[in-house]
Length: 265
Image (cartoon, rainbow, N blue to C red; front, side, top):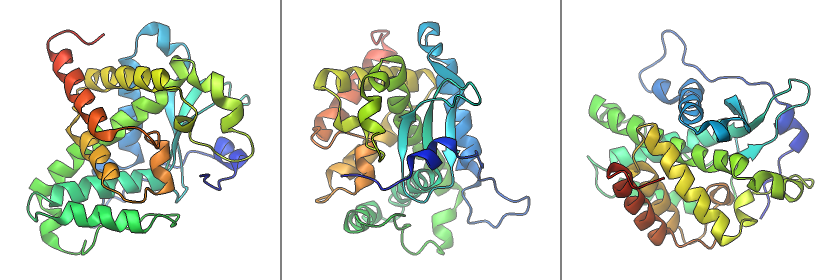
């Protein structure tokens, strides 16, 4: 499984944040734009141990206006003397906005989230995943729904960015970079040994929790992927294809409990 994305274009793209216009309409994800993603990235970097920070650019998130949902560790650019970063496509931000929104809508319309996940699974071949249905309904944009949407979004983005970030400071990216960049963009998760994935999950969970990002959102994301009979290509950028996602969610719950009892290191 490969995403047909030009590597040179991805690595050398200019950062173009997607920000809302001053008088943006009501139905806009203004609170979970690329600007918000950069803020989460900054928090993830600031809460890392100093020994890990030296391997990562303080401005660790690199956003490009690419429709396909992609999140992956990338090398810095020699021209700008940048250290290692995490590449996040605009399409991935859109995807997480939609998944988080569908999860929030499910509170007022049970079954909505499950239906949207089915739509995502059926659209496995599309470059840009479909948005949730009937988004013109004003009930879906109420303050309560959008507060839940923002919370889920932050937790999903924070954890998945922390997973990609960990591959830099744990040495996984240096180990597998040649295979990842061999002509087409290959998800690093398909190259990891089991012990490397487990180490990634533990470190990323600690990093996320240190930013006050709980696990409920990302557990919903993993549960959604687990329910897909056919996983779209973008899921491989988040988790390895063969991972037991039910067990992964149990592990996240255990780590969160350990964290609040001072036992997660």
